Length: 236
Ligand code: ZN
Ligand code: FE
Ligand code: FE
Ligand code: FE
Image (cartoon, rainbow, N blue to C red; front, side):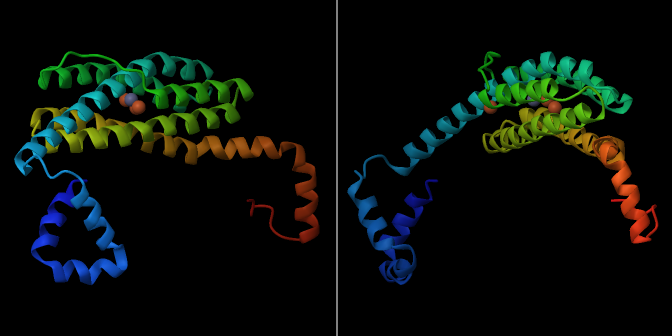
């Protein structure tokens, strides 16, 4: 980000080096541009501004995930109602409980950093939840819808993993050590949920869903196996 500040001072004290790399990056013009911008504020002030900017970003991101987690406590029950596989129902039910705790944990983070707990609509999570809803409406209840639910749920988990990963990094930079611990705890839970969903998908649902899709073609397949003279156990 503000490495330009550092490189600018380096460049002015070491002109030959800057020229050396100018052929590759066009440093010449970059240097000219940076000179054009008013060289006011000393570095002390700008780093303070940066810290404040990062803190604002952190708090905003926290508000975003707070909204997202709360929205999920309402969305996951709908996914549970639509799921048929016992494994999937169990995994979602468990993650619903975990998510309810995560909402409280975000509140703890707000408290820890001395901010009021406040939610700000997360457009991304709203979109992911909407897509999950669409998938459930567009599929038949059973293994295919289960596969769709897993796909939607994993997108949610990946969004959360990205968010909490970023929040952890910000909190670390800001020296909010207690917040880091809380956020890491949630990050690990999201990763676990993702792994569980992958396992469920791989263990049964996707296989059954593909079998169901192929049911209509089953006769054709049998004929193919016979004419090919290969073992029917080798199915793909
Ligand atoms: Zn979340
Ligand atoms: Fe969560
Ligand atoms: Fe968001
Ligand atoms: Fe989650």
